[in-house]
Image 1 (tube, helix red, strand yellow):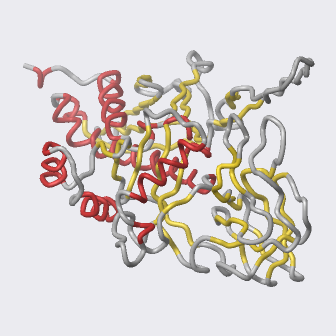
Image 2: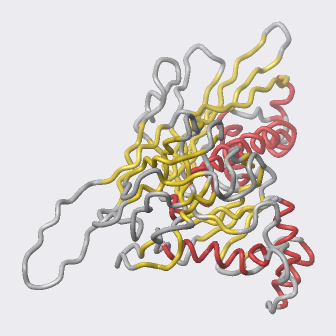
Length: 417
């Protein structure tokens, strides 16, 4: 009988990895990388954090006109991803539990642990929303819940199509586009899309399951822990302006009311003076759309001034050009959202916008048993030790991972309530 066969660490680890992998929402739809450089000895987080991976970005060039040769330097661009976050679930079970079938053991121990680890990894990854500068929707209104007369910018399907348009503006591939929503945002989205012309099978699934599924070129997902951001105490308009003209780079000097705060994740655009618009990634032509910028480090205005660190950098020419022009001296900054108010940040994104990497943890000596398994870019370790005093098995399930925004321009926040 199956119940007479003791469960081995390998069986338990494989089942834990299966449950974890199948429970991931956000992490299952991003670029994943597994680093096998520690496959033999394992990485440690005592004295040394896991590996730092350098992810190369494609080289970018400009097009020359006419017969004259115009040689360009090739500048390699990298993103560094440090695998530095170790999360684990610790549990205790009796030796008698090892006689259970793997399905029974999974239901009692592995599934609860795997679900919690998956949720934690997804939540950590979603914190990358603060690197995303494209936004759609109306702060305080669930996406899809807007109407023609009020808050039409939050009306479905426009809010989702506009978010996807930002991705297209940055040359994101049409495939592997996703939208992850909070449960209430999904509810508003289903209601907003229900009156549109859709195939009967799509309408039936939305009615029966209360989910959007695949629509509008997006694969919709729902996650109960969509992050919220309390924006800075700065005013939406009339509080900040560029203190000098012709500024470039990732620092922006501004005039601002002393004591007002700007938090990492605050988004703004220039609402006066010379237009500071986005450019086509290949031709560098003006798209006619105001470039949005995100504050990357918190700061507080003092003496009527502040220096904001921003993304994207203001670059007005060359292969890496981001905008049509620098802001004028005195150009007003308009921030998204009401001061000191919290909003949910749902996301529309292409798979390449974000990256997750895991690495093997060391298999320690002097324990009862240890096992490690890798599947689809996810490495999981199980270590167990016997407690002779209570005839129990003490075990821990560990994951070592890191997140990085790979191409944040291939993502768009969908603001909600």
